[in-house]
Length: 63
Image (tube, rainbow, N blue to C red; front, side):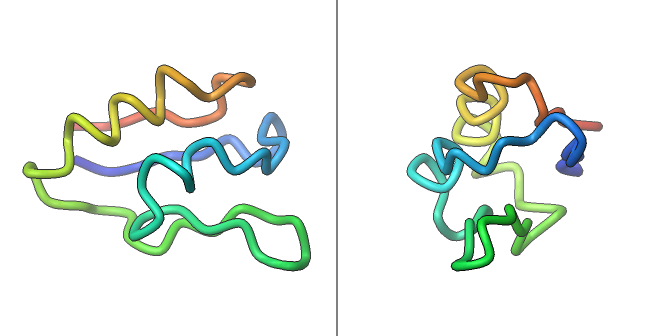
């Protein structure tokens, strides 16, 4: 699976970072960074939760 972020929609509210801090990080510059664009299948449930809980629907999964 691959994480895709629409940075034009992203508000960097860090909900995804709360769900998966090993994958998402909002830094001091208030931008979201994806630390691992291709997390393992064992992380799929957390990635789906991040997609569902994103208030701007800025995160999607491919594969």
